[in-house]
Image (cartoon, helix red, strand yellow):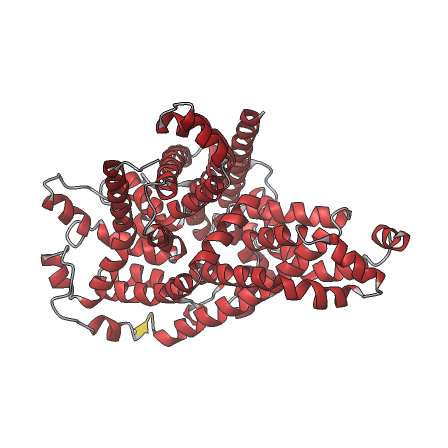
Length: 297
Length: 277
């Protein structure tokens, strides 16, 4: 065995460097370099950003961004939307996973799972293009359906009051299936014996769910919340396809706003926003992770 | 425990309603492509076309000045090549990192990769534009394919698999005097086939849907894929509802087929890849 131990300790690392080289190359060229660049660009004057010798302006872009009332509104609506979307998606997925996993549902569960997951693999552009028309005030099926069952019209993406809810529903359609399967994976490894014992001790099904199963779902709850936070803080495609930031800027979320500035050649400000959003994503995800971990101990 | 009949009916009712919510948009898309705009306008909720109207599919023979087959070929080529590249690169990288996790270079690489995956994707693409520009790859297939080859779920699935790989088997081979490439080829690769298949299918599905990097790295319509063509169409022909639905169908069909053929593998793989991250 000494030979093996020697082998593992020393020598022959070069072959592993060689194996990892293409992956490392790609990570550096398309990951670390752009991230470094985005930070560099965020401290340069936009007009000179793409030149070989850009003018560095320190934190001026950050100051401009923070002083921009449109950005502050955008940031606020991004946070509001993220909060709403995370809670709705995670709770919906939790409930749906409980149902799919329930003893009540045996036949057809594969069908239900496929139906729920198909929107996840559907290209988001195609899905949102369909939703954009479902909400249409004259073509759309949503209002026609509401009229049919005698409910008032839904403003959809045309009204500033309902646009956020409208894109939230479309995004739930696209993303929820993913959160459901993570809950399902966790439910599959829950301790069945504990459940039975609690039922034998006379706990109602709801008590069992709340006190026995839910605590065991903590890992999936933490993972899903973090994923959802990251997902919805950077909401982008749905905006590009459905609202373009409107109506009245109600869905002008940070990613989209930064992209529009970039499109106008305001690279410095756009990248300052990107950096702010990145820090925000990292901090919030980290906090969610810590809260999840602390609850476990 | 005998399930309560009433509760059971309730559970099924909710799941059927849920499935309708998930599936109805697909059906509405299909109907929208085969019904004339006037017909949809008069009766948006109809569940079967009055008659099959194929005009939309002839309208989209040309999209944004390019024949539709160009986008179909682009989608197939870009998705397939980026998937193959992604699987090979990531598998090799993850294998090396799990075999020698204590190497400082590998620890740095792993953290660097995780940092990249945490960075808001849409905002990463913008500086990637500058990088691709500097590399002279703007508007090329190579630029698009290389960027699409990087993804978190691929890495986590491979890393998880290789970590669980029994060390004794590899140690035994080393004692027998096998070289590392030989070990990889004759011992690791044959048993890795299921995970390779899972990652390949998932990467294909994910990369088929990609649009933003394709749009940003492209210089014109000649390297657009189907989702980008579709997006372009929504802006350009804003109100040609029927054509948009037809294009959405063409964009959706391939992934639907792949997913239905491998649904169990896809769902399991995506759950595992996520749980690791």
